[in-house]
Image (cartoon, rainbow, N blue to C red; front, side, top):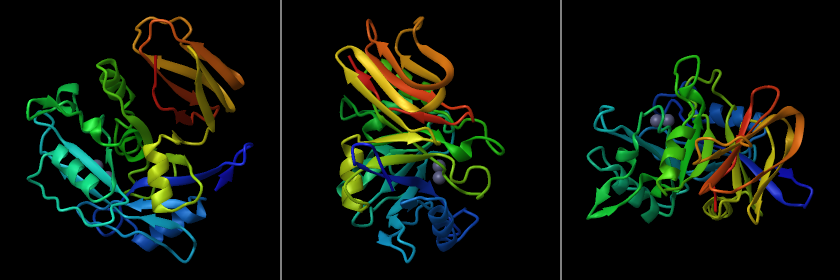
Length: 295
Ligand SMILES: [Zn+2]
Ligand SMILES: [Zn+2]
């Protein structure tokens, strides 16, 4: 837990973890011990099609119930992986279900749904905007979406970053809340790399769900950020950074990037943009990601 200058509590957690219960290389107990030792407050074990439980372990780590549901066989038809967070009953899901039906079932069971690694899955905007009963039902109706998935990067993968997918959707008017997580399998380079910081009164399933739904969190690999909107101005305060970049739906924008050494403050004035989100990167190449701000 981290307490900021205003006395608010922040909790650190990984939303996406595999263990020997599916295709991960450590037992659930080993995974919990490893993340606790790295300063995590909560961990979601999301083995494929195996629902984990919510409890506080002997080390004081909150394990939140989770599962990963993967459907679709090929990129052309669409591969969709959805993880759950905090269901209070076991979702009734199977591989014949459409991704939107899985998201609905997670919601029925009181959980949050996370659209996992859309870049790794090579999801297109068309795939993420299915028309159901005559209406577009964006899969970003999942509550959060991974903007960064550690295991999708090196040394075994190549597409960890989904920012372009999220921004193309935002440019069409469909927004999601970006999260970052490890999708831990190998317990190698992907481990304890990407996480979310949640501002909540206490580290319980209920308080975390409420905070995530309210957007009181940010995704990061280390940099601390606070991003607010003041009229047309986006204001950023952060731990020392090398760049603060404003992602928008304008192609040409000369004030988009603030680059320097030890940046701790930055701002951006919105003019013709319909949205802005912020990425802050430090001298070690670690990044933090804000949510979206509309006009
Ligand atoms: Zn997956
Ligand atoms: Zn996974």
